[in-house]
Image (cartoon, rainbow, N blue to C red; front, side, top):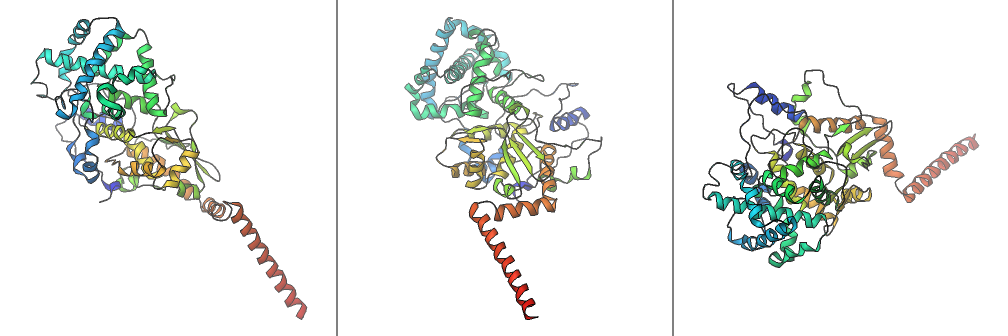
Amino acid sequence: MTESDEYVMVEIPRNQPDSVAKEWASSLRGKETIKGYEREQRHMEKVPPLILKSEKGRRNRERYEPAVVSLGPYHHNRASLAQGEKCKLITLEEYSLGTGKPVALLYEKVFAVVHDARKCYIDGSTDAYTDHEFNQMMLRDACFILSFIENVSRASDKIFLNSEYLGYIGLANAIPDLFVLENQIPFVVLQVLLKLKFPDDEGEDVLNRFFNYLNYGEVVVRNEKVLNNKHRYPLHLLELYRSYFISLSVSPSTSSPKESKGNDSVEDFNYVKRSRSFASVTELKARWIFMKRMEDEPSGAVEFNSNRFYGEFKLVRRALSTYTKSIYLNMIAYEMCPHNPNDLRISTYLKVMKALIIERDDVKELRNNGILLHSLSHDEEVVKMFDEIEVPGVNLYMYNELRLGIESIQLHKFKTWVAELITEYLSSPWKATGLLVGAALLVTSIVQTYFAINSED
C-alpha cells in the first residue's frame, strides 16, 4: 500500500450522539464546530502509537521526544535532560527580575491554576507529584518557555544565558523542544505569567514576533492576533502555533470553487481518486502551471487560479531550518490525536508540498520565486526533509478541490500542446534558434523540391 492509499474509513457506532459525527464532518469542511453537547475533556496527548509503527515513524522517533529540555511530566527527570533542569533555574530568576516580582509571587500565581493544569494531562500521569512539586515544575517550565520566546523575539543577548548549561548546540535544539507534542504545558499557566510581565497587547506582540521568526525567518510584527481564536482557548503552545500557522494558511482553493448543493457528489466518496497525488513543480511548469508567491499572505497558503492558456499555483512564503521538520511532524501528530476535531490543514499543506517537491529543481524553482527560504546546507536537504515526513491523512475536501483545479488545465489539450511546445523548444535561446533553423531548413527543402519538380516539367 502506498502512502497516498493509507486512508481509513471508520464506522461511527450507533450509540454515539449524532452531534459528535456532525462536529467532525463540519471541522473537515472548515466550519465552526458544534457546541451543543459536552465534549470529553481534551488532554495533553501523546504521539499516537500508529504513527511510530510505520517505517518513517520509526526513523523520525527522536523528533517526537525532547532533545535538551523536558517540559511537563511526560519526560520529566530523564537523565539525558538534566542540564535543562539547571538552565530552568536561570530562566526562572531572569523572568522574576523581568516582572519586578519575587519568585514567591510567581509561584502563587501559578498555584492558583495548578488544579486546572493537572486536569489537562492524561489520567495518572501526574499522580507521582504533590501539588507543590507539580507547581514547581509548571513554574520553572513556563518561565523557561516565555524567557526563551521573549529573548528570540526581541533578539536579546540574554538568549546566550541558556548556552551556559545547554551549550550552543543545545541552544539550537531548544526551539523544536518547545513544539514537541509530548513536551507541552497547559497554556493557562503560560497565560498567567505572560499577563504578569507584559501589559495590554505587549505579550501578544512577543508571541507574534516569535511565530513570525519560525514562519518567515525574520523577527517582525504583523497585524494578525495570536490569541484571536473565536472557538476555544489554546490547550498548549503547539496548538496555538498551529492556529497561527493556518490563520496565514486558509484552505486550498481554486479561482472557481464548486458550490455545495447539499449532497456530496459521487467523487466525494471516491477516496482513491480524491487523495491521489499530482505533478511536481517542474512537471507542472512544463504544462504551463507556474509557481507564484502569494503577496496577500493572510488570504491563504495554497491557491490555484486557471487562466485561458496557463495556471497559477500560489503559495505562501515559508522559511525552513533544521528544526522545521520536527515542528511539522509534531503538528501532524497533534492533528491525528483523538478527541480533537480539526480540519487537518497542516497535514493537507504538507501533503501538497510533498507532491510539489521531489527533486532539487523543484526547490530551486520555489526558491527563485521567493516561496521557500531555507538555511539548510543545500536544496537536496529540502527534498529529503519533505520525503521523510509522513502524512497519514489529509482533508480530502480541500485537497480534492486543488487537484481538480490542476486537472482542469491538463484536460485542455490545446493548452497542454502549447505548453509542451514552448517548454521543449522555446525554453532557451539555443532551443528556439534550433527550432527556427530546423523550420527554415524544412521550408527550404520543400521549396527546392517544389522547384526541382516543376523545372523537370
